[in-house]
Image (cartoon, rainbow, N blue to C red; front, side, top):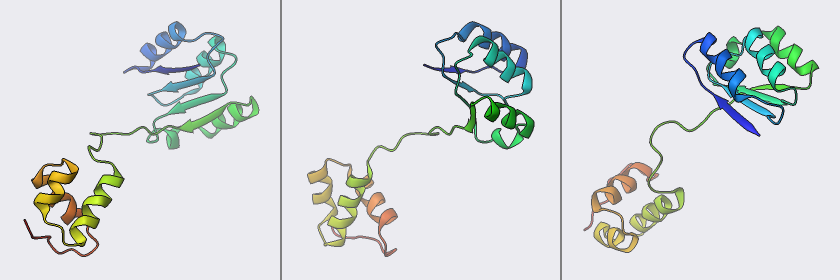
Length: 139
């Protein structure tokens, strides 16, 4: 079982860890740098933990002693990245279709109608992802 614990301060994080962890937890994510105190709290309340993750920006700041001690206990400490920002509306396959249709000379209005994508977006995708940086014209 994976548990994500987020807090703004270390005392708050330690308190939340006490509340959230139990023996069934095998993976823990913390949004603050895993210090010695944080790791001890995790291991006290969840002895079956095998993986601790933190944000990639904080991972380089974790003490090497903490990482080595965890490795000796069979616990991995890793950076965890998660997607940030707004998700893409059109997948890669759709974008490739737009670019390919435009490259073959199909009018932008027809691409828009066939794929159900707004005309302005078709122009944007075709111009942004085309290998030749020329504008596609032809409505």
